[in-house]
Image 1 (cartoon, one colour):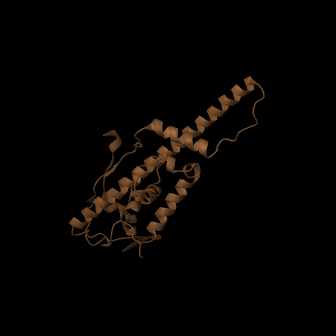
Image 2: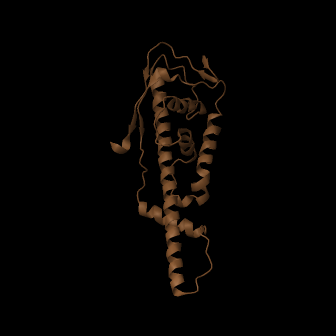
Image 3: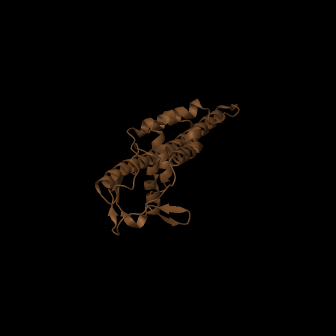
Length: 213
């Protein structure tokens, strides 16, 4: 086992670079009906009283101005919420792609004699597989602002991305990143010691954006 700083790296026999399966990811959120998502966001704004109601206007002109301003603020808030939701869906898609990629990597490791004994034979998805998530970071995979550990944590939390109506505004605006991070860290820390990383110089793979294929 090689040690570099506070990181421990598994020793890979031989000197060659191993080609891993490609990481296939969709970077565009897959949403069937965007108009329905916007409608659900409007329902959340209404149900949770997200816009404070000021004192009622005393004139018809003032009432029309109030209603126009109220509708504008309501739509702005709903659109902002939809943006947060679409980002969450994209993040979930990354996490789903990464877990599927890990499955494919496990198959690859199992078919190569020099790699076969590097993974613990635990029931998938064992937390020790977080080594592959770390490998993505070490290889500086470009993810367009998506935090890969949070993406995996989100996928571990949700088997499918729930509709926007399942979320509170607090989750969409403030809590989703902390929930995803906690889920990933809890999962990753279940791995028994010693936790080892895969040496990035010994592995290569492609990242393919399926949204443009």
